[in-house]
Length: 206
Image (cartoon, rainbow, N blue to C red; front, side, top):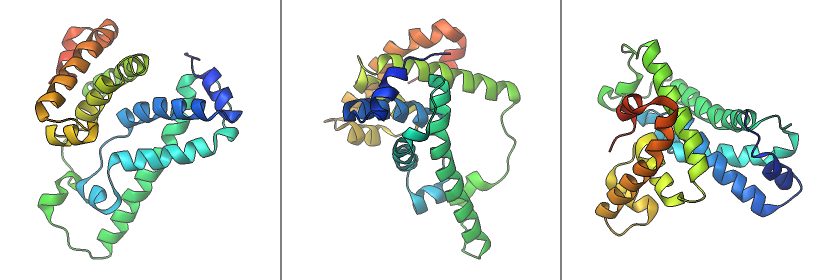
């Protein structure tokens, strides 16, 4: 297990604001990869995935003193629970409102209708790619922050090119596409070393 975050966490606990900000940046990207997708109704009512991540991350870091560090993975799992709890709570509130009689247009809530899910092997493969990508993004984010953010927004949060352009403050969609392509080029070899090119090609593509 990795323990590269130990010095950062210790400094943040001691009140070092720069360490706290750096820690927030690491966790933010990691958790956003794993935070999952929200239904359209939940996004409309309660905000985007990023909103949940930022709120949950702020809550987690406010309780950092209570966290007992064992490994980086343990820390990420601890922080992720705060985000996941907020998403689950929002989904429950949405469910209660729906049961109370709020009209539902099926076209806007297609994600709530049960459908055949992915196979177990597909789920495992996707999670392996996400885990490998998360590790690589964390390794590369200091040297290539803009490129890694572009990959995160496009691949893991599903943003459109106009949304990506606005999120990164770019002048055109062409620049957004270029930044994203450069990010994939940087990231791909790191992930391929773990999983091989065939698996990666299915999940990390323009």
